[in-house]
Length: 205
Image 1 (tube, rainbow, N blue to C red):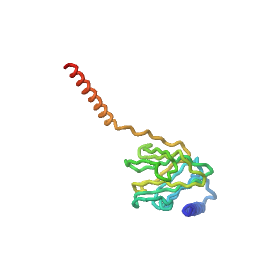
Image 2 (cartoon, rainbow, N blue to C red):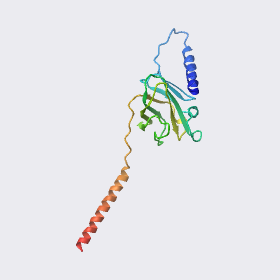
Image 3 (cartoon, one colour):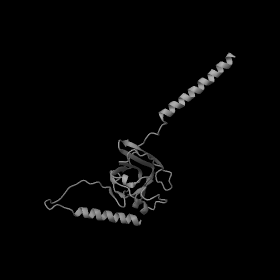
Image 4 (cartoon, rainbow, N blue to C red):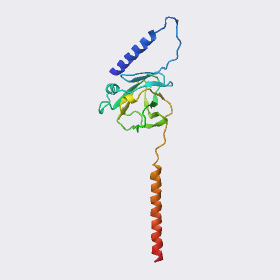
């Protein structure tokens, strides 16, 4: 709860300062802003509208410490973002996309103790963009969740975006390598031919 208040205080300062900036030659401004606000250091996103996109998602190690993530690995190889649901709706799915991860291999397990969503799907949605979907669970109003990655520097997770309560992006289950299938088929064919040649030879005797 302490870090929730800290993050909300930082957000209040940010929004307060931004509202005072005005040009002297203009009486008023009309703009359309994303109602969902994300900040960094600590990385946190406040969801005010479940139908609006989430932008500027980043990860950092400080957020993991504030969220009390247990058994953190070596410093520099993990990052988190804290997600606050300040909507009256229950969040049942989270889709996040990041660019710049390159050719790194990854997974999105849901068996870690404390996981909110029992189902997940992750993969490359477009060239250079990797998407992570978590679904089948619930994050109620005024609830908070932690997005946690481990294995690489959180600095690689920049300029992310996503949505909540949207259909998850599902990726097909990886199939066995075609060369492996080919070699397995060839081996089975070889066993079949050997067996029949032996039967033919014994019948000839």
